[in-house]
Length: 584
Image (cartoon, rainbow, N blue to C red):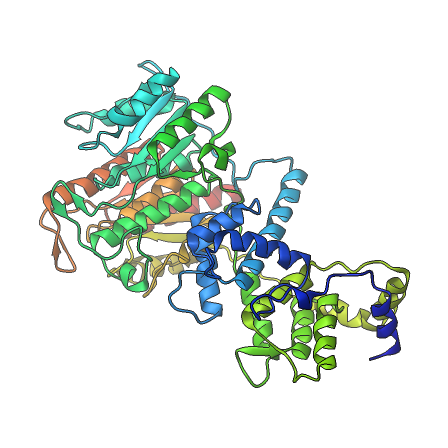
């Protein structure tokens, strides 16, 4: 050991002996950061040493972090991939440390960005202003939207509670629904202060899913309750693949069974609503109490918190997982013999490479000296332990003792060139912009490759194609980023699929006032999907959702066509006309 290092270590302020904190022969506590995180972790792991999705969300809430369900899914997915773990249903303590510190850092960055822009909201974009609406009816405080017949949640739960609070309401549930009611309901929704939507688990609620997505995208005050996925509707057994209580797999999404389609639509709706920083509820009574608080106290729905029974959301557009991926890359780069472990000496090199810093810290010294004193063979860390070490290293602040300052100055002068090179060599990932996002029906379709993409290329326009051979929930965030970075959108709701998830998407972006062209084709009675005969009731439900979507889109002045080639040409002409106008 060099003379300067011995002097530096001797005059460091006293710190805890981390070798006394090693629990269960696993080196997971290396200082105050990992110690505090472990106390949170152990409150929620039920003694298993791992957190499932629900427990992970609760543990992060304990740190004042409020991720979306999509972000939680991404954390579990990335953690499982980095550790080559099956099934993909939990995270370890080391992974939790990385995710928690990553979110804390990003929250701080976004808070500073909000302060500098004088924007204190959590939402990524400001909702569009509500259009003026001419009323021919009385106004109501709460619109009771969502699942209708044969549900009784309005009569049994919502209306009695609203009456107790003295709140007025509009109930759109009727014995026989008719298309002319769309206009009446639209007036009631425009006049209501708050929209309470319940997606029940006894109906398909296809039109309600689309409606809730549009209203959330439009920036309305929506309290959404999702009770689950129906397995039976009016005596019809829905084809099985997955339910909201069962982990979703690739094979589930590759199947076109009805439960798979509805599950995907629910996940899209939850993600889009949470992107507006609106909490999702699973209990109607709690949702009504929260609705009353919002109206009576004049607060936004996004201000509801855990004490109200709400699951708040903060900074929903933050991407998670990259830090753990980088940690895994550093771990793999410096391990030697055993690919599942890394030595003490190599771990420090990996940490310096990972964080672009060049300093040691007390935990490392103690481990190193303890091993040398006991004449042990070189000690190794597995990936979980290395994640804990990396977390402590990242958050360690060097004390400024006089001798420490001298050493730091000498160290800084010797490594200045290397530090500058490290900062300059960090990759800059550009945002990839495209002209058109090609949304809508994906499975067993070729309209993108055969019709739309060639037409766009011939006119010098780029596009993003979300169609994949295998799809799962993690692509929701990737696709959302692609949509945000596409100037125009073309959505095709074809006549060979239920299209419910795509209708949810397009309704949300219509509410956001995005530049869009829509092609909608109704389902024909007698349709089969992958050999499955759709019932007349199912086709009526999905066509009703199409009808609602067409009505909303037409009122927004967006072109609607029923031919894909014609829709593509219409979009190209729209783009060319806008760009020609800008160039004048």
